[in-house]
Length: 83
Image (cartoon, rainbow, N blue to C red; front, top):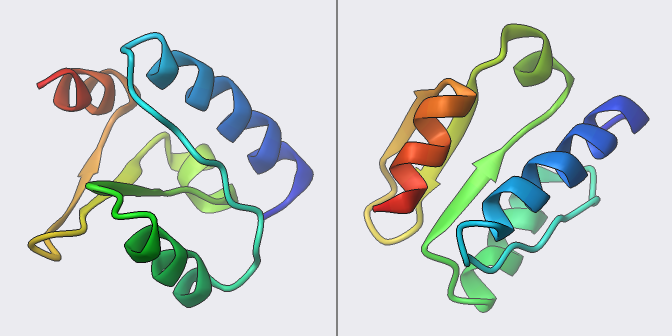
């Protein structure tokens, strides 16, 4: 994750926290390691975000219980997390 993506994550994390949800921002470059940490933390969802997602404005949200993953716009992501 580059510096631009990290700043983007921090802003997005702030928006998600305004929904009264807990957010952890991981900076490890290995996706597998970050997903393992999310499992240990018993996260319901993980948001996969990198430079490509920022450019396309499409975010991958993974349901950790089912393994299902969906790609959402920023507005759709925030709406989805409100539920």
